[in-house]
Amino acid sequence: MTPITTHNPICPTNYPIQSGQADVSALATTLGLLPAPSDPLSSLSPTLQPLVSAALDGHLPDDTTAQTLTHSTPQDLPALCRTAAILRDQGHGNTVTFSPKVFIPLTQLCRDFCGYCTFRQSPSQTDRLYMTPDQAVEVASAGQRLGCTEALFTLGERPEQRYPQAKQWLAGRGFRTTLDYLGHVSTRVLDKTTLLPHANPGTMSRREMSGLKPLNTSMGVMMEVLSPRLTLPGMPHHRAPSKYPAVRLKTLDIAGQLKVLFTTGILIGIGETRQERIDTLLAIRHSHQTYGHVQEVIIQNFRAKPATDMSSHPDASTLDLLWTVAVARLILGPHMSIQVPPNLSASDYPIYLLAGINDWGGVSPLTIDYVNPEAPWPSLADLHRHTAALGFNLKPRLPVYPRYILDESDFLPQPIRERALSLADSDGYVKGGIQRYVRTNTASSSSL
Ligand code: SF4
Image 1 (spheres, rainbow, N blue to C red):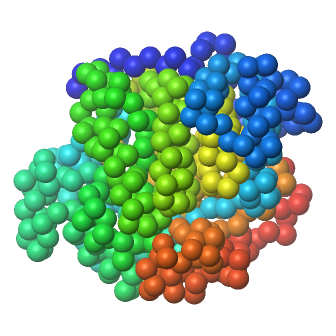
Image 2 (image 1 turned 30 degrees about the horizontal axis):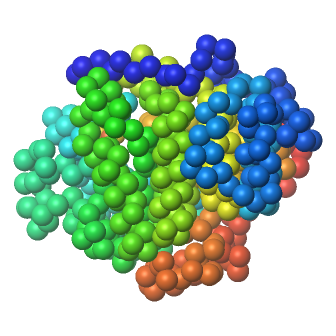
């Protein structure tokens, strides 16, 4: 493979702190996040003050004004994070959520080659081209016994278009495409367990998504970064046609048009600029403003993996992730659910609560993160303890957020909605609450 020659113009050398520091309180104090600035505006550079002041008054920056955020300095970071945290509090109070899930990697075969990926496999690298329906049901059933409510199907992009072995495997079982097979397995999981399927199969056409909608609570596609530059030779998406910006955005918009609840997000640290991140967040905002279907936005940090084109590329730093989370909250507003995967910042993940997140995404008590197999999930007890230590109330949620269960049922097919209602309490969270997963009586004495 051609070596990736990315640069990272938003990780200047005066941002010295990388992910992995153990003492979150000390780190937050060092960064000026604790104690929180009482007046965020007072410590901001004059360029940013009008934008932040307007955001605190309920006016999100328009597309042009949002670009001002590219000029923020490291000294602006505490005020940006504080503002984002205030906005988060307006939209979510002190509730922080996670989705208890199982991860079902239906196939790791993939037509594409992204410069950072270790999930994808070629047929020669695996003796299991696809999981069988029974294998998927077995994982889902085991998760159900542990209280999981989400069956996350993650898979490679259209492997049958590259590998005859994949095509033959599918044809031998009566399927033309991987997405047709995904529909079949989703049905089996729905029939045999109480879990709610959430499909994460890459790009989808209108026909494909229509076929999956009755079988899935929600679906997802990361936007990564909508930058044509990252598709050029030597860049991470050069050999990944599904990562071309127009293709990603089209899937996001089709989901909105079909009223499919959607998870999306950005991947930072792969050579993009601040402006490209902001442009991607604005594109997500625009789609959501048009269709109202984006449930949550993930801010994911790049981590270098061995044996990839980007194995020597630096990880996204803590400061860079803090900045991006805060900017995402300023652009997407108080009510959007914004999440950071805790397993990708194992030693300092609570700090992102100080930059405006309200969700930890899917966390599994059973299965590994097959996309980041080197990064174990925190235990649910740890997640609860660290979240509570910063004053937040951790609640398990379904793959459909409460407001869509309780208020906007037209996004959910009726059988899926009925199942969601059967799993939810009167507020739309998982019945039984966090006590179903961890003993909570020691939380108040916990510390970071
Ligand atoms: S990131 Fe997704 S699309 Fe890219 S190579 Fe990996 S599995 Fe395929």
